[in-house]
Length: 198
Image (cartoon, rainbow, N blue to C red; front, side, top):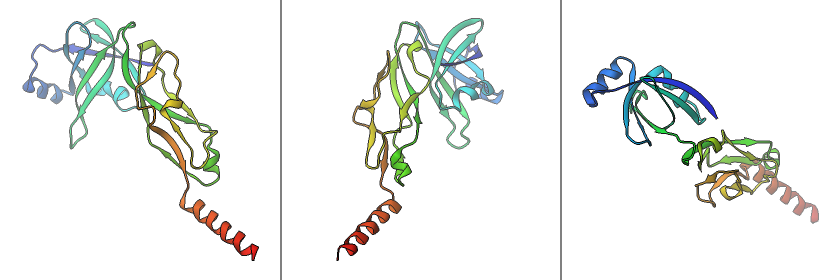
């Protein structure tokens, strides 16, 4: 799992006015929870980019006034118009405490159904996984080599070591459907076969 170090400053005054001033200075208000008590702090907006603008799960080594804590981003709020981050929730991690995290899906290999002209439809881009922090996978690989036209890969087909997938087992991750061109080609082939029989 990727890891990044971020330094923050513990906040004394927590409120709208203080948050506005922080943002004006280029800092983002944040909260760390999951431990004995919540800690309100601020972090430079630039330091959050490699954590927020990636599909990957990234462990964060938080340094708050010299106290180091391992965490992950649990939630982030963005301004509805400017898309600038306005607040971040960090969840403190413990080696012996399971966490639930969205892990990105990586499709691997080539689908024979796509080679035949089928259309690939990916319904899920990530799976919700529960595990101890050290057992969380960086990504979940979904092999495509056996995916024919009309077939799909469902959540129940994913087996993870020392981790549990929380999504509905019947949910479709990826499927290959018949494309319009392939359907047309099959219909024309069927017509030609019928015509040949006369």
